[in-house]
Image (cartoon, rainbow, N blue to C red):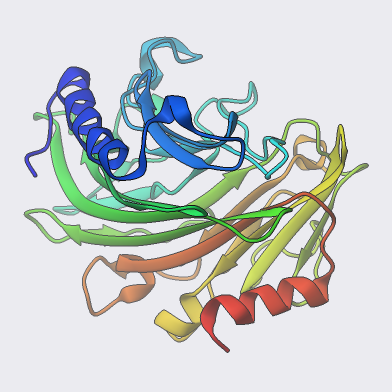
Length: 331
């Protein structure tokens, strides 16, 4: 599929895809309370169950981002991500970090031709992780599936903007019973024209910014090794979860990584402790915390990553979280 070069051309692609989906699965207008549906609205793909928004993927750049033009490249992120009851588990552009975008996965630094570029803090103007196209692959009673095409671009001070990484991200939203939604994210990246190295840094890659209402006093973080928010930073992990209050009770966001299966070693975590942002949840699965990695098929820790995120309308315990990780990877 040819990559659109404008918001309008992208909208045409999604509209065509949605039309095929509607032809197969019926009209959105006729949906009943339990049915899943997908459509393009205002530059993003939205997934609903009945009338409740469950997930949205930002393809077009946000029209009025906080912070102005410095954030004009803000795209390629999931927000909102909701529990089945509709509780929003993600935050976009919080005042303390305007470049935090819900559930998203840019690299902090990429190195090309001996120069490194910051593609995480897009306000620096050095680069960005940007969305290109969205294609719906399937849809059913309890599952929706897409392929999102994204690029990492750099902006050299002495030359034009260039695409250095092509990405295919397969994203599946599925029901895991009455109280849980699962988002499966499979990310495959390859260098565009020149070799790319993912520079080692304390944070980089698959990340989540949690609800602004959660903090050190009302939420709890736990990893598969039983570490909390004040101990988990820098440690390897298969999964990490945060639980906190909702208007209707409680919710848990469980993030799971398949790195130990794919690359032979788990990723390390960058998390905020109780002193950072009053313990507001920030979690990053980082394959380059310890060392830089070439972006090629021989280093799947960077080029081939898989995650599952569960958004649950209750508090999970560690035994349940471990069981979910094993079930997901067939262990």
